[in-house]
Length: 134
Image (cartoon, rainbow, N blue to C red; front, side, top):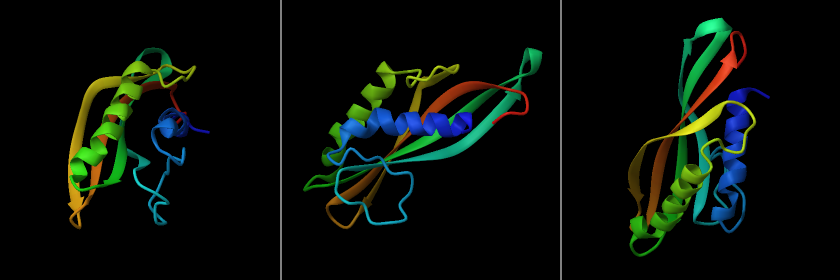
């Protein structure tokens, strides 16, 4: 498993307690079983070579929160707050590798129908690999 996949898997485990199903999806290929729901996707990744054959990487991760309610953004807000609290208190994601979640993040909102929302929190994870490894 690549370091990137290890990070995404750790995020799934970390965020699972925040939704009733306990399941964090990696895609929206199928209808979500219930709301609120969380989908974790990798975003842009940059890399820069450092000394002694090590590569420092920065991975953006989109954490999508789907919710429904009379005030849709309020319905997503408690899950969004829980996601950020989980990231802020587990900055190394429980991984043995050299990885940490930055404090910088972005949140975007998309509204559908009259009572549904997708809040996307973009978090940034820095990690290090040896040259030639992912």
